[in-house]
Length: 245
Ligand SMILES: C[S@@+](CC[C@H](N)C(=O)[O-])C[C@H]1O[C@@H](n2cnc3c(N)ncnc32)[C@H](O)[C@@H]1O
Image (cartoon, rainbow, N blue to C red; front, side, top):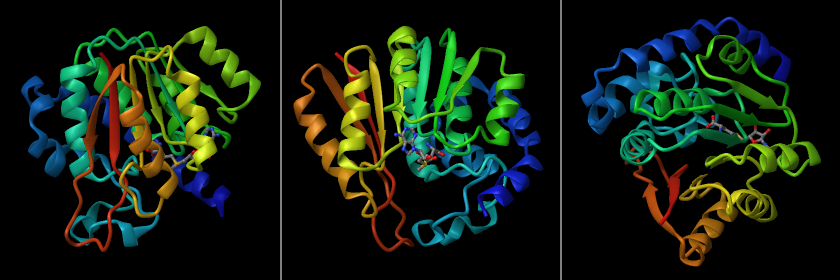
């Protein structure tokens, strides 16, 4: 089953280049236009087609296309605009739990687009590097490293200590011990820490951890991108960003 998906995604790797070009060619003013990003750019990049009961049916034509982004366009649009305003200083970006790689690629390219002098992007996941990740390593204009292991492994911990990523997106182990470990790993060195699934009925531990961390982390200002779709029964996904004060 998993092998079938790798074979399938291998037929779609041209979307990595077209995503890079779409972001590079975007008019700069559009980096702050959340409606354009939500309704035009993000759907065109392609949305994931897993767990469709959690996805708005009105976006039907975009599921199973392009980069298969596992995000709500409404939330990702608000997050990208926030990054346009807050991400310029990022030099080393890390995503813990990158899965197929869509969000990792878009955020790395977005940081460059908005003027960050990105030196390194690090993707972490115990699954084998996916076709999108391999293609991105091959064609990105900046260095990309794939750590094929758990965030709790010695190799990832040592790499994190050496590279000191200043922005980290946490979307790996969604259990309470898992999300606590990942946050603890990076909280001293990162200036921006982003958590996924902070408003999801499907992930109580990540919601609970975010609610705790936003009160406990006094040295960070917190921002939430959690808008929902009326056509979906329940609340899902949700992006929470913390910026060091
Ligand atoms: C929800 S998916 C990530 C989706 C991805 N961030 C995106 O936006 O498309 C969660 C991923 O976390 C990975 N994972 C689980 N435990 C992990 C850990 N301890 N360290 C790193 N990755 C982990 C899984 O293999 C899975 O690919």
